[in-house]
Image (cartoon, rainbow, N blue to C red; front, side, top):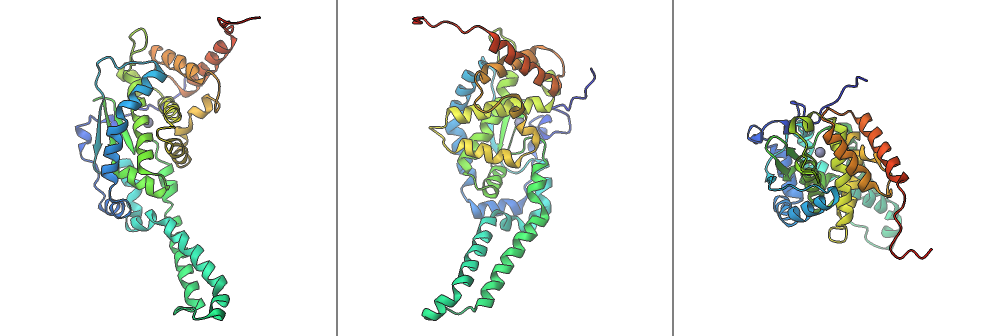
Length: 335
Ligand SMILES: [Zn+2]
C-alpha cells in the first residue's frame, strides 16, 4: 500500500536546520514590548521553570517510556525571539499586539459599562451619578466592542491554529538540542490566559518527549536512527510527544496542578495534528502506557517511514494482544 508520509523532520520545518543555522530567530519588537508590558518577568519565569523541572520531567519520561538516554546529552536552552512560522503568523497583527494580549480587559469594559448603563437610573435617582452621561458610557462600550470585532477580523486565533509544527519550543534533532522560546510562551500565556510556569512545563515536557522517543535506548539498547525518526509521519511523532506530555502532566499534577489545564487549553487552540494521540487511546484507558510503549518500540524497529494509519493499526493490534493476555493470579489469591 502506497501512502504519502508527511515527514515530521521535512527540510522546510524550522527545527530541521542545525541549531547553529537556526540561531537567527525573528525579534518581532512589537510583540516583545507587548509581552514585557503584560507580563514583564516572563523571560525569568520561563528560565526558572526550566531549571526547576528539567530533571524531574526527564525522570518521569524515563519511567513512563522505559527508555534511558545512557550518556547521550540533550541540551535545553531558553532563547530570545520567535521561530519563523510563528513570527510570520503574528506579524499581520503587529499593530494590535498589546490590544490582543489585553483582550480580557476589553471584555471587562463591555461587561462593566453594560452594568453601569443598566444601573444608571437607580444611581442618578439616589444622588450624583458622576460626570459621564449614559450615552457617553454606551459609546465607551461600543468602542470596546468594535476593538474586539477588529481583533476577530484579524483572525489571529485561526492563524495560530493553522501552525503545524512546534513553535513554543522545538527539538533540533540534528543537534539533540531542545530550545524553549520564552517570548512565544509569554504571548500564548497572555492570549489564552494560562500561567507562564504551567505553559513552560507543558512545552518542556513535549520537547523532551521528542528527545526521549528519538534518542532513548529501549531494553535491548535500540534507539531510533535519526533519518528514520525525521522521516516518520508527523502525526506519529507529535502524537507520541503529546501522549507522554499528557501522562507527565498527570503524574506530576500534585506538584504542578496548572499543567494539565494548560495542556488542555493549548490543545484547543492547536492544529489537529496535536490531538492525534486521542485517536489512539481513550481517556483513562487501562493499559494505555503499555499499549503505546510497545507500539512505539515496534515503530522504531520497523526501519521504514511509517504512515499514521499504520501506527493506528499497530496500536489497535497491540491493544488486542494485551487484553487477550491471561490475568496473572496474585500471590494471595484465595479462590
Ligand atoms: Zn512536537
